[in-house]
Length: 326
Image (cartoon, rainbow, N blue to C red; front, side):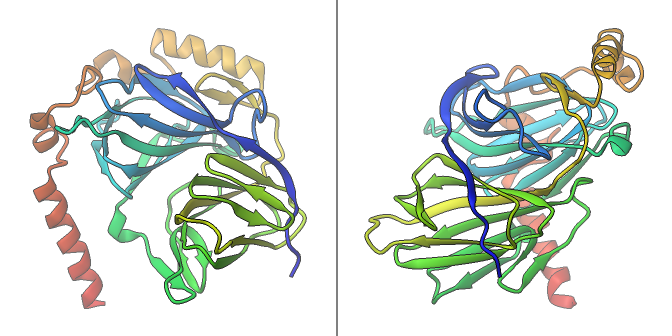
């Protein structure tokens, strides 16, 4: 076993993004332009109508994890739905897509909070057709350790003997959602050809070797070992919550302009022209009218988006029923 050393620890500074939303960005800024295969990492929050109205993507994948509340989504391929707490969505932009991501407004005014990660696509897969895969809360296995002091949701990869392998992303990604109580430890095996980072969503001081991370810090690891170790000391007064995410390093150029990602400047120029003239992957713009960019209503949730709580409960019961039969 070789423990990975730390490359850098950087705080995620809050900033405005989209229309009325707030994000803490720790990848895709001046301090960390990218961390192959990762292009951007946002901890977002929105408690009003402000969100992310229709906008394009090309040459990448996005992974969205809802931590609190709900967000509606739709795109010009006809995909649509509602993500609720602990749900995930994996979106492949490929040769081009246009979508909207807008918050569900709650009567008590509470915020919708989540994480969004942008992942580069291998050059040979940048022209694939766009697609969506949703992963509901109940589809993610959860494992406990140290008498319940450590809880891990295994979104992708393997932890504590529990594995989840689904066709979620073209670029290989491991994604773990940890919760730890004071006085606990974690040890995560990691592939040697993956870059890994750890983002502390909440908590006190997390010890990683001789370094310490605090709330809203992103810890970037060097690719020099096969294990990541951490300790959450007894002296902390609240539980810790963090995500540990890794992806296979892509040995290719990254040329990015906003939501368009390619390996050459010429492809970026072509992408802007194709988007402007609705061609070469963006043809569906001509016939698509966004439903949710002006705001999400209860009627939309219950009807066009198919995201009512009743429908969700039925979907969960059906899934768990099938699982029990196996």
